[in-house]
Image 1 (cartoon, rainbow, N blue to C red):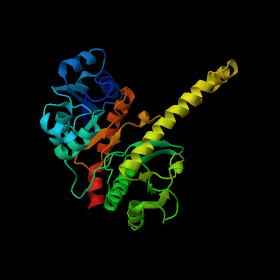
Image 2 (tube, one colour):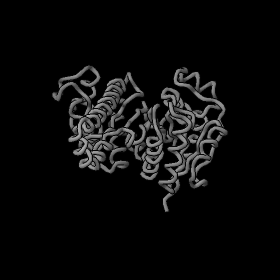
Image 3 (cartoon, one colour):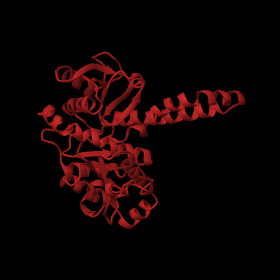
Length: 333
């Protein structure tokens, strides 16, 4: 029987906390017996939310935390001062080995700082990138980095490529994942100073399947499995993906209801269309793991609803089962 994965969840983080966070946790434990959730936050508030649901009670426990770190707070100061916050206490559970993973829709800055200060980086890891899965025509790709390291160096991007390859091979099951660096053209001589300096380093890495540059327009087509960039570029790509995706879905739905004929057609294609549109909704893929830490940290969108919280919790199972951190250690050394 598989070992149960314990996930510490910041129940107070995010625009829809604690209601959607608690709902997502309940849905996760109802879907899988392989996971136990520790909801960290204001106990009375969390227990009130839990009373709304029927679930396997042995799979959810609550740890009281009296403070909340808000998005507007300076991350370093907040981590130092608010020792009884849901973020700090949840991260401590991972550091102390009481939980295997941490999930939060709360302050990105505090999660990034807390992950590195409280849990710590794996030996040899220079920077820890946020790496979300994004939908493509061929399945999914890993975008690394999307928000943690705006001022990255070439050596950082090389490590991102290696860690991303490990994740895609062992979590997503893609053999020899194709790695590409985001660029403004396919030619090797193109790009800014960072890309030009990083390209030959990636080309010289025999432990990854580097395929060269990738232009932004080729990302949705699934031209690479691991998409490497620094966080400024990665965050722009991610936010544009979200915006275009939601706009297209809205336009398709509006068009389908614009006339009687289109409504009839919509009824006929609804099952297939629903499944297709669902595959392009980012919340279906969970959160972004912060790769390279001694424990698993997963950051979800601040606006996350229950489905994304659920999927973020469930993705922790595969991460632990495949011993991703051990594989990253071997790759980075």
